[in-house]
Amino acid sequence: MALLGAQSAMQAYQEMMYGEHKSDPATRERWATLLKQYCRLDGDDAIREYIAKMGQALGELFHALRVEFADLLWRCQKFNELFSAGDERLVLINSKAPLFFWLVQDAGLIKSY
Image (tube, rainbow, N blue to C red; front, side, top):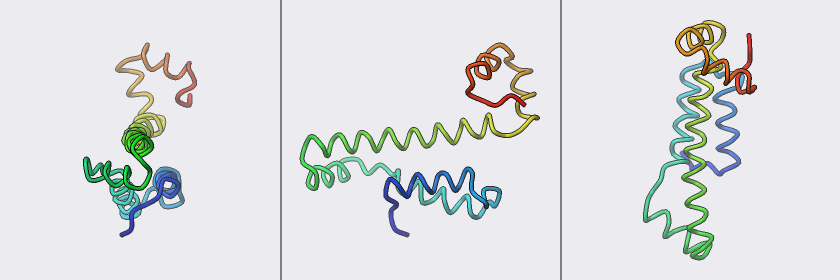
């Protein structure tokens, strides 16, 4: 399985979360595997490779951005799992922490159903 590029990683994430087969566990797992492979942090080996190809400053910056991108993908997935699960989930979270989730809804971060 080849590593994804940044643009392909975003397309994979969008397909996994919103695509036609988003409810198919096998398809989601395939996309998740590719994304994890893309976001795998190889530590010193990765930094050395980036520096060799891009120079010291750009290589270190690219590695830092890649770490941030991996974190952002994870946070987006968790946000979608929590807030995009439908009416039942919103009723549950609103019953457990109504003020907090009202503020989140009021800020427009989740849909009101």
